[in-house]
Length: 176
Image 1 (cartoon, helix red, strand yellow):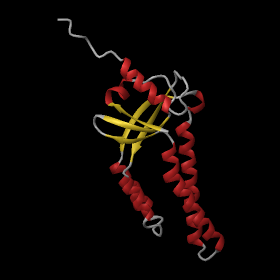
Image 2 (cartoon, one colour; image 1 turned 180 degrees about the vertical axis):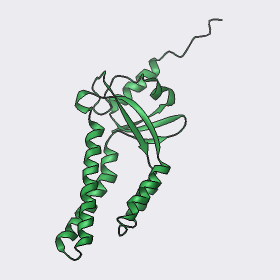
Image 3 (spheres, helix red, strand yellow; image 1 turned 30 degrees about the horizontal axis):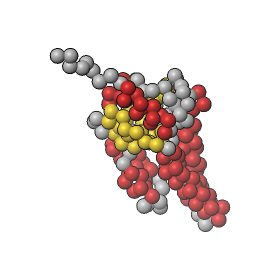
Image 4 (tube, helix red, strand yellow; image 1 turned 90 degrees about the vertical axis):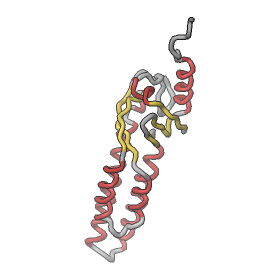
């Protein structure tokens, strides 16, 4: 997967090339998605104190809300990938809920081997949900006032954007 930096004019004008950001196929369809970035230090901080499993998520959620930057983008997607973000969203929440359930069971019935195995399994699933899923989807890896960087996009989308940049008229020439 590739990465591309789009200027504010490019991503707000709605004139991105009709190439699916996930698979690179031609697509006239666009999908709005609200992207956000959270500093990695906040995410990693949660893994330093796994014993505080009920307090840490609340603190992390609050810090993530304060430190996150949000942007809504309309990106071209083909019919096969129109649910690209929705499926990952539901999968992440399912993993999070099962993790909380297993942690709750482990705290209610301490010393049972089944709960210990469930606890470690939940920890692995939560790691996948936090580190693997968000980094294998199309996501915004950097946002600033002038541009944003999309990561996980298909190389054909990058090539189409670069081609559109080179064929775009540069304004009126000096006819003097």
